[in-house]
Image (tube, rainbow, N blue to C red; front, side, top):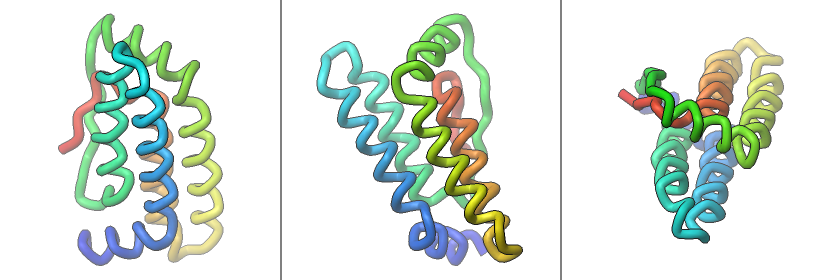
Length: 119
């Protein structure tokens, strides 16, 4: 089911989410200071393209909290809103509910990407 879910996901919304994360990564990598943040964006872009069968575990310390606050102000809120809107649109039909739930998982990740790990 994971492979089929990932293929359908990529067609019906994963491409848009992944490209948004890639754009955020490219914009962060413009400055030398933002390169670690950009690399984190590229890691989560791969998750956005194919999220089925993967889990996200949240954790981290004070450094992660500080980076998450800066991230939320600069890039996190637009990415989270995009995922929330797409997730709500996907949840309109019964068939789209699993895809909408994946978008909601990405919306939470868009607000707190630092200190989180993908399994």
